[in-house]
Image (cartoon, rainbow, N blue to C red; front, top):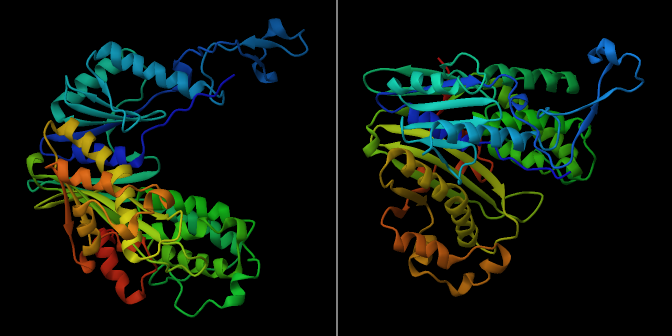
Length: 455
């Protein structure tokens, strides 16, 4: 039996969906598919038989010691169940809307030209955005083929709450996970048997970690993964200010030390003090004035435990009066960069090809026009090298990082809708994803990320 891999939509796709629903005259609705997997047939090449649990055995099978039956539906837990449910959903979409387009660059997202609706599917969660007048027609058609909960205005997706307010000026959305964060703090206090107190930033103060701290095994080495995985989910969905700190700690799980105990306690103290913080986005411009912005940055060997740099990226949808977060990331680079320029080039390449260009294609599909992509860099040497398309000192990048300067050069040279612009470091939104910032600079970082105290 072969396991078929299914890639549900990611948070970038869902955030783009919500942004589309925030345009003038648009809205976002959602519904859950009732027992989603069981609504598809298990079309395996080899029949699957399952043994019935005692409470499910009918009277006529009581005389059988181990009753088994043929599995006809895609039962959750079967290695091919997700694939067959995905195929079933695509079949329904194609049957109802012959021109429905599955967006290959964002798996689990469908564009429906008939209603100008964008649909995002995450297992059994269906989120739809587009013109307000088309939603009821769409849901009525879907409910004829799939069993769905009653559709409603978007509220909670994957544990993230959405507080949406609409006015004449536009739409504002606050992404929050306060209840989830409280659970994270309670788990930490239970495991650590230590009460948390608020901290001003997620990073320990300079000089508070000694060399011996990195050599001694930490007391939370066995339980750290339980805490980190919960916090990581929150950082990916609604708290970009936690992304760098939590990413650094997840890489230490196999060699957890006293230093990591101290760093985790500082992070959890910051989370405890900022549990009411929310990420906010707003659309207050017509769609023709919106453009895609990608901020990329990198440090140069600022980590204490190794010499590798960290790439930072945040991608937003912006306009004269609009700012909407789409995705963000903090990634350790795979090799040691020999200069700041080299580290920044690697960050630009990853942000451009992995995040920005696929999102540009999605936005052009749903907006029906050419969408301008602007990449911001605070390193002028990087911009000059990209303009030239070659650098003798960076000839090794294709070997060490699998980054080709020529391909980056061609994107900006051959496409009028792709720009690479210089931005001052003080305005570089990706900076908080690259290195631990001092307490004095943290309020400015929160402002750049538009993370605010909820009101």
